[in-house]
Image 1 (cartoon, rainbow, N blue to C red):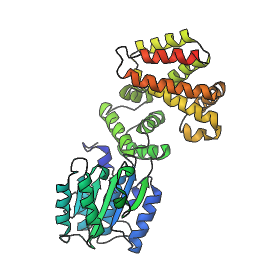
Image 2 (cartoon, rainbow, N blue to C red; image 1 turned 90 degrees about the horizontal axis):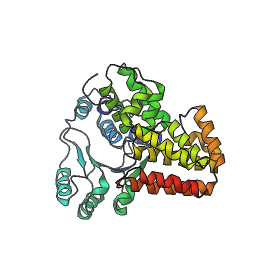
Image 3 (cartoon, rainbow, N blue to C red; image 1 turned 180 degrees about the horizontal axis):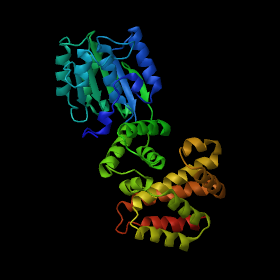
Length: 365
């Protein structure tokens, strides 16, 4: 393995290698093929879903000297400059740390000049919602009267914070969290190329922990490979590294709640604490599991979307436990544990809010 982090090493170099966001890729590639390119785009969505990566791909494709349809050749001087990060006509700015009007004025001055080498001068503005009010107004002025060679791509995780006048001048594309299967597909490909053996259970755990962010998933895998460079990666390795709580612990704890066994629940919790389990992680996992139960209680047909990648045994147990709860009880129980999770962060005895929530949730049934 090289020392290059995985998300950079395996960053897609062409649209065909880009995983997920098919609706965005299809529209953008069609625009490139037809030559109907807009002067401004707004990429909005969850972190780690490919906004900046697709912006760079788009910049490369429209500047490629020998494109294959919409695909960049990755061989011409323009592609090579962009791939190596040397293209002075591709301007990337992080608005989180460059949010003032002076930075935008600087952009306005540089946009006045035609590209040095490429066909288009492309500005990629990450976390665009963090621009100050004055900076946003200055950017709006540029977007209203852009030169023909300038393309603006604004990326944000919080599109609702963008001023409407800027958003209205952009083609907006919403990036969604990647599906569980898509994340596993990419991770499996990386492990194959890195010649690393990894159990399917371990892949499932990483995919679940990433919460739909490919960058987070690749970051976790990178951490695991650094920790276990010469070993087959197993599910328990992921648990140990990330402090994940086993599903069986949550199921057992919920069983005590259903059986209204206060003493049993507190004893079981104490045993887990003796094993150095993370209280906040346990509470978070418990809340997530109860959330799944209430969704199953409302509509059991949602099982595949609520519990992707789970074993048949886990799904069967969840369905069974959901049936044994009243919907109103589940709702109140989740609220109790949400409150306990918040209190545990500041409690002098960290497990006390969780213990009190267990007692109260059983007492109200």
